[in-house]
Amino acid sequence: LHDALPISRREVQGRESGDWRPFDHVDDEVAAALTLTRRSAARLLDLALSLDRLPLARAALAAVLLGERRAEVICEELAGLDDAHAAAVEKLIIGRAPGLTTGQLRALARRAVISADPAAARKRKEAALKDARVESFTEASGTAGLAGRDLGPAGVLAADRHLTAVAQAMKAAGIS
Image (cartoon, helix red, strand yellow):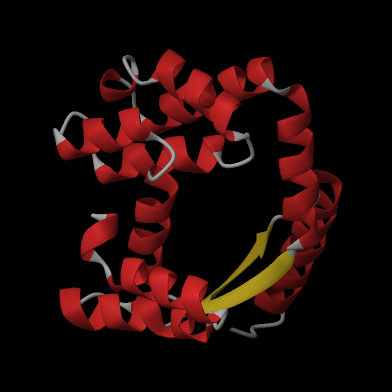
């Protein structure tokens, strides 16, 4: 998958020139070529790049033993590990992955990651907290949604209580 994408060509060009700007629009090219949204194309590219260091998961996906979503879960959960730890965890979980739900697979992978490298989970959490944000979006029904991403648990609980109170007050006042 990776070799068939424009990213491999861009990588060679970037290494030769030191100019990495052509990577800025690879997801747009993939989106156009595969008739995907830019977000879906970016997800596909992330998966392809992540699978570069996970040959067992890549082979299982190619053999249709793993679906794309299970492969993504493995890549996401092993992302914080160095190559040696990632290979060890991948070897440990890959045989069970096809028979698990994505939630079960995520839990198995997290336990294996913590066992392999306890510091990796802490580093991953710290990195995620640096990317804390609130996103707003339009729902399919024409309403709107609001989501907090990578927030600390205590902050999420406080925000939930506050937003629930605001929503209840607006509803009681007849504001929609």
